[in-house]
Length: 186
Image 1 (cartoon, rainbow, N blue to C red):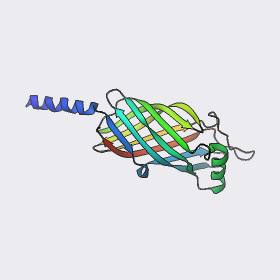
Image 2 (image 1 turned 135 degrees about the horizontal axis):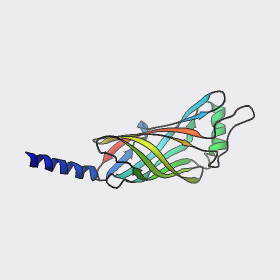
Image 3 (image 1 turned 135 degrees about the vertical axis):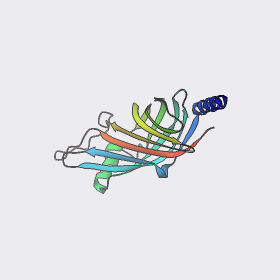
Image 4 (image 1 turned 45 degrees about the horizontal axis):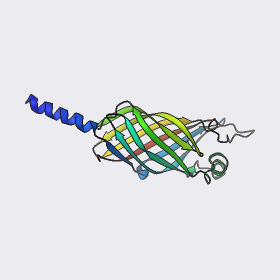
């Protein structure tokens, strides 16, 4: 009996070490933003356009890309959104926001939850920025989700701060990304 248990345990370790393809389902993923100002907090969202990742759990190597449609950003105020697109994001000129991860710090299990840090290159407003973000990853047979929260120091990264004499906003915007999709073992 102990030989059978040992063989199953070894097979489980080998399965955990297999590379996993993570397809992002844009319909079941969300990108929300929060920007504080002196009077109230502005909340809005963007649409995830596409994404596909490949994870090697044994080494932590993570490749691929997640793409957000910069032109889809909306906060519920047409005037504020026009200013965001025209003056801050310049979304006609830079229509996509991209994240290209290269590795994960911390182990990702193929079943259950894992708390990790994802490192990669974040491209916004035509510039690349190195970024490491905390993520909670949930893996299940054929399905995965990840919840990520981080701040973008947009003013420091060369984008215009939309503050006026009467309205002062934060120089960074908080992002909450919930990605979900399917998994396969190529």
